[in-house]
Image (cartoon, rainbow, N blue to C red; front, side):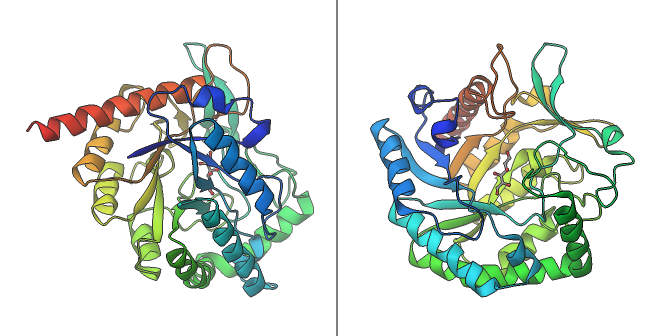
Length: 350
Ligand code: DNO
């Protein structure tokens, strides 16, 4: 496996100088964040990012994300031109050494939580999604700003988008994903890049918006659209894991054995009796997922893709981007390194 860390560029309070000190840290996961979806990324920005990483002994080889324009997901407007721009961005990333591009196909909103700073009994804070806090909210009627949602949309735009997605429904979204992949994957094959789709987070419909990348049947369907290692998964344990019906260990084993996991997001979550969930510490004992079994499944199937410690809690008084502080993600990386070393050595010595 190749250990990686997400870095939000120069504005990130966590510096590359600190990231490089995490044992076994090799790759940087980043993106050009100041360009809107549907526009071409300037080569200077990619060159600069590459140089900053090189100067710190790190490799900029994973992009998270090249966002997919809503019109591609909705199949409206100048879709072909927007997909061409997407392909051009892939070519440009490849030119600067990128090997893996993460993206998602979630309508309107990326991940959804109801609170970003829930205080745990030990004083740490983390992201949570409580159904109790969601009750009665209707984005068609109310001006809702849930944490994590793109705040650049006006309430009218959100209403319009929700209505448009309601009209195409989940089959419409699948058809638009197919159209997108059939054009994008051949470009990835040409330039040796693996696309890694991030599952919907959480993996069920929110406010009636269709969400399609949710479970094993969906992952099978998505991978079958283009049967190529360039069309792969970003298997996020915390996203798939917050539906108790998803057997994350079995999914990891199956898709890793097929060589269709390009990127692993490793974090734990604690599912509550009503289906709400809290982002817990990475350790198996802290949440509902068995991180040891997940790692063992990866090692036993010869996984050699990228891994990053996903969302951490805020600990030791750190402030910054919720989920993306240094300390708890560094603890996560150390723990994941330990799991991999133990699994690898026990297999070798068996
Ligand atoms: C949350 C992340 C997601 C992810 C995108 C990929 O912290 O896991 O925002 O980057 O869904 O497109």
